Amino acid sequence: MDGEKILIISCSGVGKAFGMVSREAMYIVVEDLRPEITDTLCLSLLTMGDEAAQARVRTLPTITIDGCPKMCARTNVQASGGNLAAGFKVVDTYRQVRELKPQTVAMPDEEGRQLARALAGEVVAEVDRLRTAGKEEA
Image 1 (cartoon, rainbow, N blue to C red):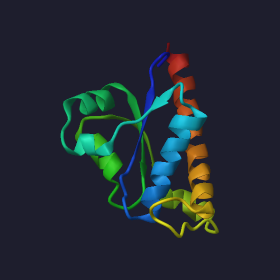
Image 2: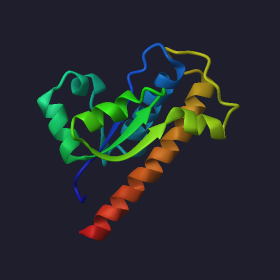
Image 3: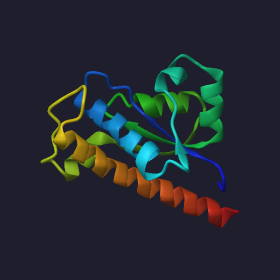
C-alpha cells in the first residue's frame, strides 16, 4: 500500500444527527489527522454509478462510516465491487460514550463534535493498521 491512499466514505445522512457525526468524523480523518494517506469521495457518485468513483473504490482500500442501520456507505461500496477494508457505525461508538448524544442535525454541537472525534480515533487506528499491514506485505 505504499504511496496508495485509503478512501474514507461516510454516509450522506442529511437531516440525521448520526449522519452528521459520520461526515464530521470522516472530515476529521481526511483533513486533520491523516490527510497525506487518506481521501474521500462523494457517496452520491457511487449511488449514481459514476465510473470513476467506482474505479477508485475497486482499486483503493476503502473504509466506510455509516450513521444509520441502512448502512448506505457500506452497501454502495459493496455494490460497486469496492475494496472494503473496514466499516464503522456511529451507533457502535455512541454505545461506548452514551453521554455524547448529538442534539443537532445540520452542524455538530459539542457532543456531536466529541462523538465524531472519538469515532475518528477509531477510524485512524484502522487506517494506521492497514498502512502497517500494507508495508509488511511489500
